[in-house]
Image 1 (cartoon, rainbow, N blue to C red):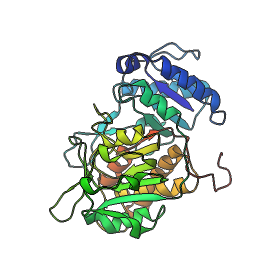
Image 2: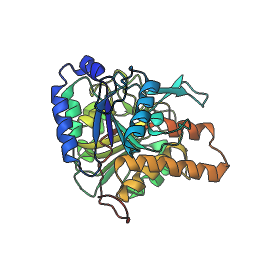
Image 3: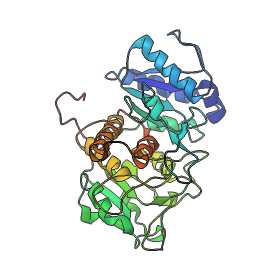
Image 4: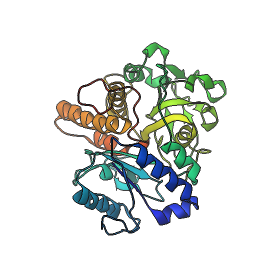
Length: 351
């Protein structure tokens, strides 16, 4: 497992990096199974790999050089937000309002086919302070055997299909009637999984429901109190964190909660069907939940979900259409990729 960050950029973002470095050393020493190694891409290292500038392509090449020295690794953990380790700005295959697709897929890939990841890759955003990052490194997963889901009314049937691997479809809450003012904070507490299929915006801190032409505010960062579990959101810009903190991004507020172990979501406009069968974001998140339920780690679950998504799309159409391609590129994972909700259920999984 390679843990990667930029020393100069971290200094700029969080000032005193000593608490983070101490937490990193403790993390590396305590994780014997995955043999984690930590490096700054912009500083000399004991492996003789030349430092590089704060540039996505250069950092990706640094990761490749690291594998040539030490052999292939299955997990890659990026420490820092876009200002520390830049997202790739990939060409948007869809005709929508996104100028490009923010993606970590190239970091997870060993060749020029960025669409299909080979490594389990995740990121711990910095939120501008070291305490936030240290908290992510120290998280563990508590089991509660309960889930929560919230869907826009217009997507209720398709959301039920996604939610089925982790809970009873009839237990899904819908918005409307759920609104920010009527949101019960207890819904998010003592859960294994939290699922959201709602509207989002990179300009607003809120997520929105829909019924017909009505788009009520479903929830905001202030509704995320005492939350627990793994969060997966299909909302547009649900994982958009450029110049965001826990005060103006629900994803960051979830990560600031001590018992939220990870967040999976889209950095840009996401697509999904109004009715089953599952496709696009619905299908990817459904596969993500299924792999988590089988005992895979967070990082493995998203990587495997993307692989299965691509296979299913190829079987259906014979190719990946524009929506499929964008879905595979835009979904990212925040948090420790080696955490898991359940013990492994299949032979051969590392526990």
